[in-house]
Length: 146
Image 1 (spheres, rainbow, N blue to C red):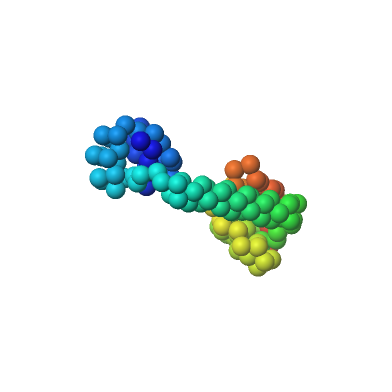
Image 2: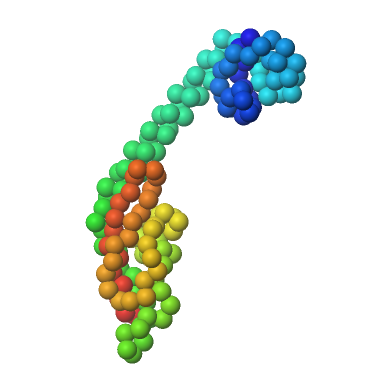
């Protein structure tokens, strides 16, 4: 018997999969507990349409992230921080500071996507922004005295 899984079932499949199971397992366990429904033509068509739509949206998201990565490539971001008389920085420049500077430039980037070490000196460094798997870009962060 063919069923469409409504939830992940260990050893059987993931949510949305169309799987072939024995009649007893399908009727007495999966359908009875609400983990699956019988695979009708309309149900199979609906699942197929959902998968196609999800793949399309994923592709659009990847395209948008790639465009943003290309736009940000080699951009220069300036972060100002308090500096003492001898050039020592009070605190450090973190990904939060870089994310705030990017936000002021018009880019809404989550601080968790910015990979860099905490900077405790004035100068220039490279930071990496990881948008998605296989989509990264590098920006230059200039740390200046306030």
